[in-house]
Amino acid sequence: MNEAMSTFFGYLILLVTILMMIVFSVPNLVKFRRVVRPIPAVTKIKRAMATAVESGKRIHISFGNAPLTEQNSAASYVALNAMKKSVRMATLGDRPLVATSGDGPLSLLTRNGLESAYRERNASDQYEISQGRLTGLTRFSYLAGTLSVITNDNVYANLLIGDLGPETLLLSQAVRRTNGKLLVASSSIPAQAVFFAEAEDTLIGEDVFSVAGYLQEDRGQNAGLLVQDILRWVVIAGMLLGGMIKLSQLLMGG
Image (cartoon, rainbow, N blue to C red; front, side):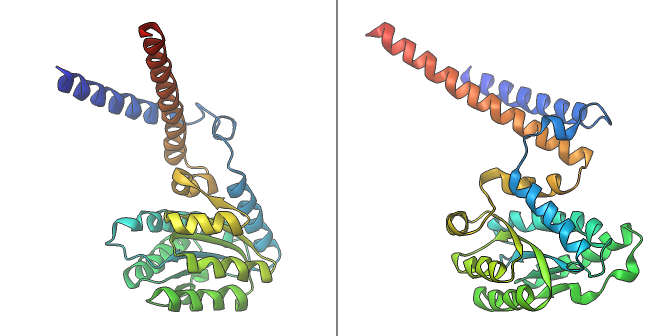
């Protein structure tokens, strides 16, 4: 009976989630900016990207060096999506966006994603194959190559998204020396710890997977963000209610 009830509630939650996604995807039904909680770190990096475009500097996105076949590569796919969103802003400036990574297949996906994004913006003439750079195949060679991009390529806005190691803290220090801006979104716990202490803006937990949706408003992604926030509050309410019920049982039993 318990197993049947668990299965029923599992399907019920799935059905409700799908229905909410469909409802929130309807154009003009909800205003994204009014109902989704703001993430100040993403707001600041969007302003930095706009400043980079206006001042003739570059937007730089770095993916880390986690192989795509590994479990910890999920954040790299988030970075690919964020890169495509950032191209929309970069096409308005004089300098093209530059993307760095430390894995061969990831570098190929980066170049393909850049080319596709520029084509969608009818700006294929602005795309250069050198925009997607493989800066190194090991952690430290990737670090050295990415440091060179930050310090020598007239970069202002930096998005560091992916599976990162604590050694990439040096990238944050390089951004500070060049008076640039940095947003870090990593699925690595050690990287989150060191960047939370050092970097100005670091995304923690599931916020890592919300970057692309916040960079550019898209109905499908925004619906997912709304549902994610709603389910988060439902879980919190359920935990509080369960705790209160357990406490009342203990008090009554005592």
